[in-house]
Length: 268
Image (cartoon, rainbow, N blue to C red; front, side):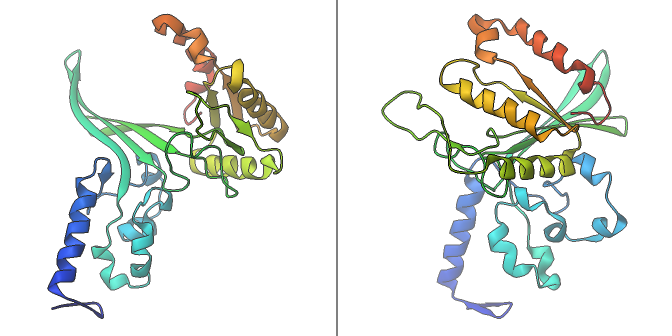
């Protein structure tokens, strides 16, 4: 038998736990590190206090991106075993050594998927009462060149008000906007959190501006206007219409709309 922190495990139990762990680690998209905080962007890590840097990975991890958070909860009150409690992130990481015009640099892409309101397409849409958007992902591009690092962060998520798109016999179910709730409460919470985490917000809405998706775009634009927050800017771009028949060059229309704020340090 094995005795660990007050719990007695049989060898059979240990085999079961190891098989469960091996199963999770064999599934694509799960990442962990025992030396680096994967749950925070380079931008956030560069603006932390000495006290934060001294915390264990468990204490300082961003709970939005800790997929084994419920399992680690019992360890939080026991600092002596924090080194055994490793946060697991779900998303995507790739790293490449690149060379442009003879200049060599490292290029990294890190996508962190939120564990709040995650789910499969169509079944999980909109936000919850806490303002968590369905299938929220934070994507960070990092360039490392001669000891200097640059980080560019984008986020994506479901349109942040209360709506659904339950599957039926149609190829593309019609979105349904809830008429029985106060959308602004959750909407406001979502963007308050976004501003705290990322600063100024440049919203880019790519949904169709006609057909069944039209009410989603109209409602989104109306709610941004009603919120009247100078930290939030909204741009709608009908991607399928503008770029139909592989006309990817027309993305320049969108880039021109975003260029002014995109060039501001820390903007959008």
